Image 1 (spheres, rainbow, N blue to C red):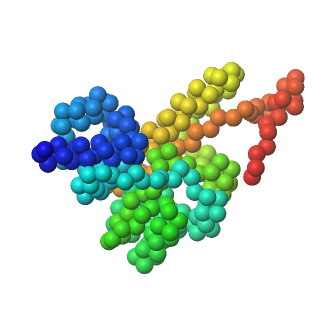
Image 2: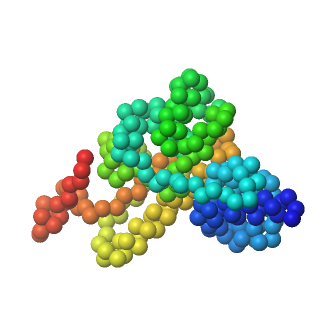
Image 3: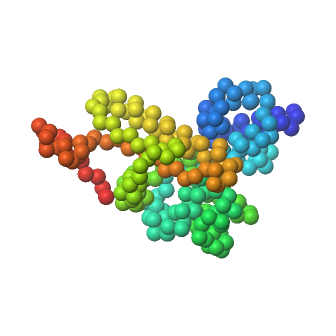
Length: 254
């Protein structure tokens, strides 16, 4: 078996161990699923493309030399206590967000108000939390899953709600920006189907991060996606509803 074929077959095994599909890779790379299948079936994959896929799934090229990959247990949520720790330490939260966005060490030290010693200490804290695996030379591998999310109603979400006025005080007319508020009446089954599609869109945004990670930081400005759907009638309109109790929104935990 030649070297390229060995690496591709090894990569295939690692993808299977992490339950990553060809479709996942295609969405991240911005190519068709058929193109990805052809790369693996025909063993036709350049070293550059191989490195892109490895970066996407947080696999070191050296790991491809393992004949039997070890499944990595990735986390979908932090604990309540861990989220509270991030809220109490904004520098730690900022670094966690930057690592998920695949910032380089140089980008972090140049663009954040962190000394190298602070940066290294915060990395160790994230490693201790199980957010990432810290390796030599401050290199790390994320331990958060592709569909990682903050706890609904948890400390991070509550903090985000407190910043709602700052978030929506904006025209939303810049490049790549959009704001749509649509009021509809749908059957619960239809609402569930649309919810699934919105969650897929959110995942596509997350999957695009590793695909763009090689670009300089200034070529990938920060973009925050907010997808929300709830049973709700705007306050000023509730008084006109025949059934004010049904129109009144349910209050959540704050």
